[in-house]
Image (tube, rainbow, N blue to C red; front, side, top):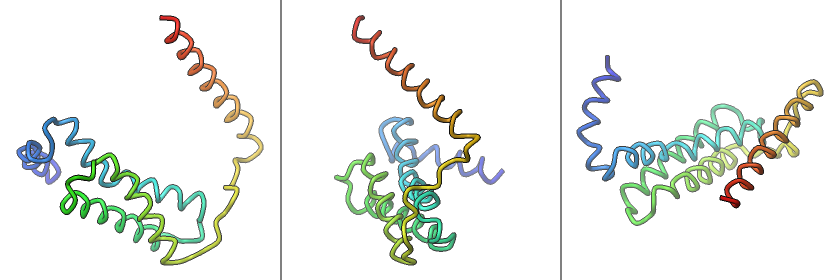
Length: 136
């Protein structure tokens, strides 16, 4: 019920955020997409950072994006993803520096072949679509 009330109240503010609803949704999503990607990158590349520092990085990235939105309106909302990721990852890494796990942990032997086959299938399908697009 609370979320519904928030959505109704927020719907009256969409006009002030962006000229279209789609752009407003993307703009609001971009506030957290970069920091969320930083969380995934931390989990894969530097799992030793830990939950507390990773979440600190997430909130720092979201705060950076909010500051960009309010204080620097000339910066496109598309760049918020990049800034949020960079700040989120950097703050988490600086708060608790650890060695990067490189290369990242690979899947177990039983999953490696199906994952490789699926990646090749996706590549072939995309290549097929690009050939069809060039002929049309």
